[in-house]
Image 1 (cartoon, one colour):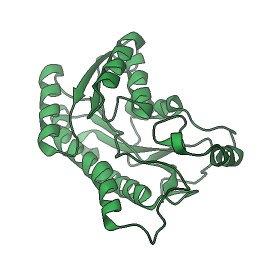
Image 2 (cartoon, helix red, strand yellow):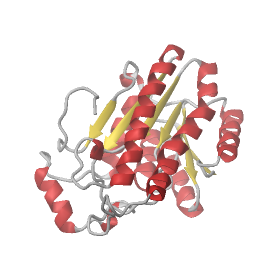
Image 3 (cartoon, helix red, strand yellow):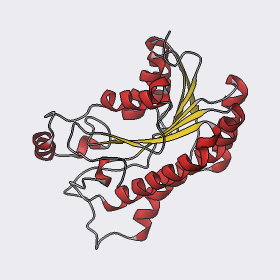
Amino acid sequence: MKRCEGKTVLVTGGSRGIGAAIARAFAAEGALVIVNYVRNEAAALAVESECGAAGGSGWAIKADITRPEQVSQMIATVSEETGGIDVLVNNAFPAYSFDPEQRKMAWELQWEDYQTQLDGSLRASFEMCRSVIPVMRQRGQGRIINMISNLLYTPVVPYHDYTTAKAALAAFSRNLAADLGPYGITVNCVAPGLVYPTDASQTTREDVRAQIRAQTPLRRLAVPEDVAGPVVFLATEGGRFMTGQTLVVDGGLTMREGSHL
């Protein structure tokens, strides 16, 4: 039997890149995957079709996850049609270019830069969790996985606004894990390194990619499918006794003990 047979999995930002790889990986395990998107309907529908081809099923749903009313409507619609949500993957984040030459230095940033990232990462995840927690509590089970970044631990390039928002999301996740554990709901994070190719990483120069590869014990960069595997693990039986943890997926670039910042 497939590990996610009969499960409903909601992946935000599921129409491309890491989100699309996560959606396909869950579908390959038999899940019904809700492919959330906000702009690119064609890409979301393509992932929906790929989920079916992978052995599960997909359902593309448009919703701006920074808008509470749209989040509530999406959760209500999915719950009514499927009976509930078993897994939530908060993968979406606002548009960002990982370009060390074009990034803003600490003294150039405005608070609005931080606010954009906080709204797109922390607030969006907050709105999703706020709406899905009652559904999971009623069922007495659930898995929440929040996507952060290895830059929290190894800021090889100090993308201040992006990393600060992801650090806030990590703290939010641990607090959720403490509150939700008694209700059978786990909350964990996955922290990828540079993933190539994606829309966000396409502006990262080859010399920077080469430097990261050289410093990585496995001597390569992650591809989206490398990140999807640990996400699926946390949502399945093998990850049932893990909560409040972070899995770093960067080929060994970051080596640390425990789950502390």
